[in-house]
Structures are given as structure tokens and as C-alpha cells.
Length: 206
Image (cartoon, rainbow, N blue to C red; front, side, top):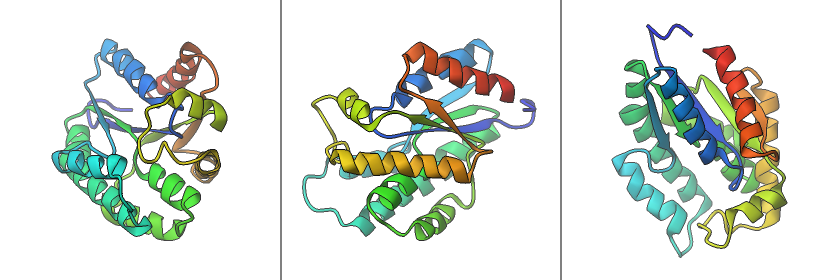
């Protein structure tokens, strides 16, 4: 990467309980120690508008239609890309994002049974075709992931084991489809061993 010209957009994906948020924080420190400027952000909720959408998406108690769920995630993403992500990359920063386009495909597509081609098209519209430079998928056994989440769960974390198995399957299918962008990390291992895998890929890119 020519750090003098542009930043980098890296996304972190995986089922709830995969440990991606821990790895974002570890990579953030690692990059800062190498004198890279970084931004940590997330979806939903990475922009001012997104914070309000996140509250609805993760904590609304009533019925949410599948289509409404998709469109709220897309609205959050459109604002996020234009207000935060592009700006950060143009300022030569490494943008580390907890969830992005692949979450919609894995959760609303594979797990909810939505039309995947349609979701891909909607993602394209929401982002204006702006894609991550690199995506990490933290792959972990679904039963272990559910145990890691603990007792306090948001609306999606409360979905059953079969739902989360479909999420995992979706991510692995995406990794097969986009091997240049998506790198699968074995997240069944210790935090340190997981981060060793992340560092190896990052060092090759940087």
C-alpha cells in the first residue's frame, strides 16, 4: 500500500460472539504503534443518524418487517460511507469498521432467507459502489459463539442456534466468492493466536 496516497478501509465480520470487536481494538493499537492514523467505527451506528437507527435495529421490542430491517441497515450504511468512511480514507487514515455490506448478506440474506442478489444490488446503491479494501471474517463454531455472547442479548443475538448457523454458512460462502477481499480467520483459537493470523495478513498488505 502506498500510504502517501490513500488510506485503507478494513471491515470485520462474523457471527455474534466471534470476537471481532476485540480484534479491532488489538489491530488499532498495532497500527498506531506503526504510526498509522486510524478510525474505529461500526455498523449500524457509525454516524449521528446511524446511532438512532442502531437503537431501533438492535433494541426495538415490537415487530420489524424483514424489508424494513434491510432498508434501515442500508440507510445507516449510506450515511456512514458518505459521512465517515470515505472521509477517513481520503485523509490517509486506516478505517476499521465493525460490520458492513457482508453482514446484510449473511444476516438478512442467508439467515433470514432474503433475496441475496437483491441485497447485493441494494448494498451497491447504498455505498455508491464503494467497497472495503480488505475484510476479515472471524469464523467460530456457532455453539461456542452463542456461549460467548452471554446472557444479555440484543434483538439479533436472541435468534436461535439454527439462525446463527445460517449466518456462519453465509459468511463462508461469501469468502469463497470474494477470496481476494475476504480472508477467513479461525476464531476458535485464543485471542492471541487469532490476532497472529490478523497480523500476518496486515503485514503482507502494509
